Amino acid sequence: MKQTHHDAAGSDRDVSASGSTASNRRALRWTGCAMAGAATLVLLSLSLGGCSTSIADLPVGTPPDAPERAAEVPDYPAVHDMPAPRDHAAMAPAEQARIEKELIAAREHQSQAAQTSEPK
Image (cartoon, rainbow, N blue to C red; front, top):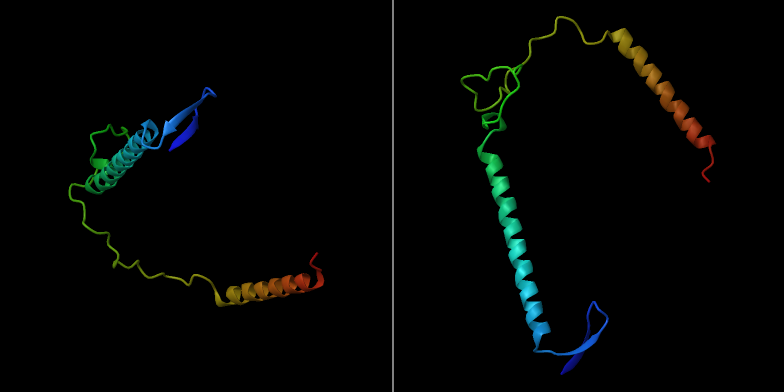
């Protein structure tokens, strides 16, 4: 079976289905697979390498004003340590009531403004 192939120069040439075009397609397919495999290996190695080393442990120069690292780094952050209780309330009850009234008034004003404006 003969096929006509148009190359970049604009000339036509006859190529059989089992000729060089088929072998070129196979070569390009293998090349694409090899490139995809190589890219996958590179990304996998980078992602796994990120899990094994801390940036602070890399042998890269640190700025002179950087604080010293602790000799013993804890395994996990102290998530159960609670802060000290406050000695005063975060907000006075009178101030909280005033702010709630202002928020309610603003919400009502917005709902009235939305009802009076006509959608286009």
